[in-house]
Length: 298
Length: 289
Image 1 (cartoon, helix red, strand yellow):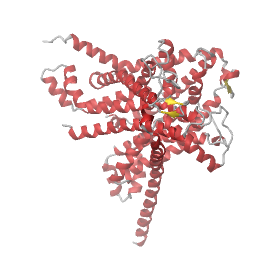
Image 2 (tube, each protein chain N blue to C red):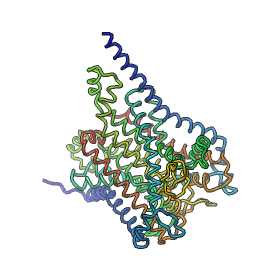
Image 3 (cartoon, rainbow over the protein chains, first blue to last red):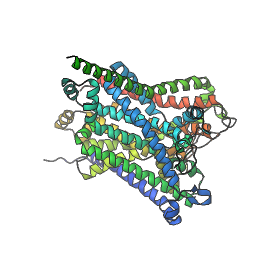
């Protein structure tokens, strides 16, 4: 005997299903609108000019290479700072610090995670950039290095919390086994705990650094916004401009449907593809270590 | 014997040095946060007066208050909640309670992680393309809220799903065996049990939305408005955008007002953070399982 499901329940079930599938719809919508507005750029600007080294839209120079390299140099700088700082802090919190210190450190990292990016930019303008200028005797404090330092602040909370999580899920018995064979706590961290948690730590780094590639307001406010090719030895200490900052600072002033407008959307497509690549890499790591993924997801 | 003692001593020394280095790294990471927050409070607190909170900007924003920006951020946050909360909880219920383990469900999960990774400025472009131009909503609170909701969705879905899954399976079994339908079980048993976790996720998602600038840049943020927005179709000032404007676009801006504005924004975000942790810890204490 099978009872008929009441109509109201069937409607609710259906709406829940629709909500469930909405994420797919949104990803496809985002991609199609980016393509719809960005693809015309390919017809309006020859590919050779798009990959040129000069970005000067007012005179129709749409070379996006300096912007890509600008994003790259700032992100690499941020990664060089954020990876040791983030993983080191995570190890300290998870393996070394006594309980009372953990209770202080973890909320503080969460406070940093809650900082709106515009506020990091604001602090960069008022505090970091003037101090860097004085310290390194630069003509301007708005440089790639300033951006990298502050972007590290964006990446660090992600790296700390995911790596700490990963190390926490390493069973205590693993560490005990290390101690039992005479290893010190220090040796156990490097020889046992960290290798056991490596896929989680790697994912933390990828997601943290991935977040900083897409960061907009902070870099726009502190990197000086000069679309020059950052290839000289001192590029880190001079102004650059990232892809994100270019979109944010120029979209407000372009005419809808103009070539400039289309190229800005094209840069959006590039950013979308980068975030896609970052995510695929991160999930590939999770899939290779399904056990860890289960623990993280459960 | 002597040999052994020296190796164990040198091991201990290595550990001591290693731990101190790790401690220094942690201190270098965390101390600037304390320093910056206290400096901001010290610099910004004198600016925060009743007039600053309840007044309108005057003299080209160089004096007066920031009420329109505070209210604007409130409107945008509420607007985001209106769209993202029902949709997010619905999606979470689907994933936790209904979804079969098949290719489609995997596709949904991939889509969610993708949404979470898309840069905020790309959401801004998308919002401009679809809501402002294609659906002709103009730069408005509505367009900005819709943009922010899609950005917030992955946070709400994943935290809510986690909360729903944390409810022990025996609850479902017992409820079903008493004759409840699936939806009745969800509505009466699963949702109430997982409510604190869901609320925490909602607040954390909205906290992010409240602090975002890039997605509202071309979808609803206004440089300056002499009056409050009258309807969801109006553009609005917002705290994060206002902070951006007064720290980069207005020459001769008094430092005190800049720090005051930053402090109000920080307060806004921290309060939500604190509410979320209070809900979480109280729920943990009261939990029946």
